[in-house]
Length: 138
Image (cartoon, rainbow, N blue to C red):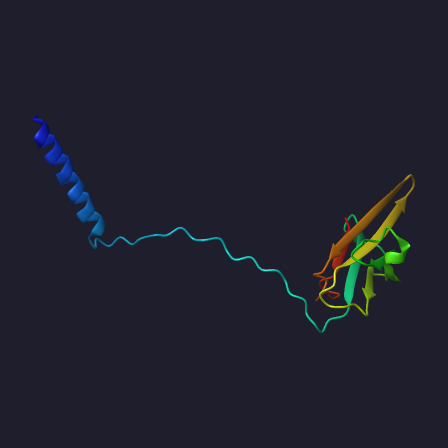
């Protein structure tokens, strides 16, 4: 086949594909969705307390000592702001907290021959309740 016919055929195929793409043939354009926006929980300015639940193998631990500390952690006694003992449900309530502040919650469990430490530091403690406490343990 002579070269001008090959070029003309290729141009005709290209023109038909452009017409087909621009025609209203019932197809709709699909765009790739963007990722969902991320948002951080905001502090509730009226909540000044938090509930913490201590567990061991998913079982509540009563009479466990739990510390509320500054954002520097509980390793230094000067950072400890409050200390509570868990009730029969393994929960302790901390009060007089400042919304939006990062606090650390700390407990240790001792078994013969080992000590396990649990600590969580967060500014998202706001809104915790007895139904949705912060969890310390395993």
